[in-house]
Image 1: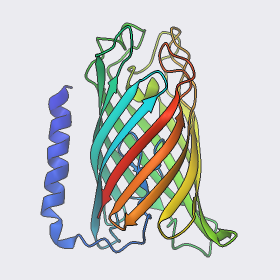
Image 2: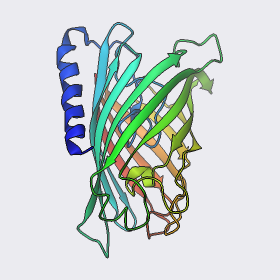
Image 3: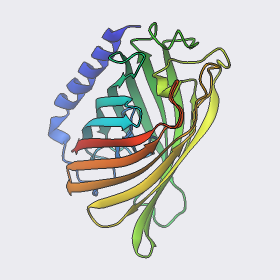
Image 4: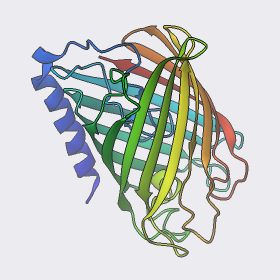
Length: 289
């Protein structure tokens, strides 16, 4: 598997969108497709949600384009861009590339991670099923390919340059739950071997098997245009050379227009490779349709 696979994925995604143009309308409610998480799926910044990206109803096709920049206190930077398409509020396809810029003693070097994802809504509706506690439930998978595996990831003990993450996600919107404000809650279980989301390869000398890791988030709609929330995601600790810790963020999203969102967040990634206490910020822009 090489980078041509990822390029083909982008081309197929764009082709699917162009051939589907006549049914694109985007009639779902504001923010019901979420924003875009770091690996390209519809959700929060750190974790996929069960919602399907874009504003397409069960008779429409929607989607999103996004770009995210993150920076930590020791000047690690991560730039991610991608596209996702939601088919009939049932199936989501996504493609993204992350570029991780390193710091001393590897300043000027970078690691590239390509991700192709699929998500399928299997049960429930997070927004419209208000007469039941049943959440919307989706299952998904993300194929990830590390273009620079032989540079840092292999040297620190990672076993593979590519891998597949599997997850089950649940999301539920509670209308007027907190003093009249809408509350969105999400909970995931993910089976993965990815080190730092895959930026440091997959598997390691300490552990090279799939395990389940939880992720949770909650968000409150402060108004028709503002969303504030927090996420917590646990990750594998496969490498004896570096201890990997959970990731956490506190985010705020502004919707200046139904088709545009801007998200800013405080992030805490814990230890990143050889640097402890990597806190910082990220800024993400998204176009939805």
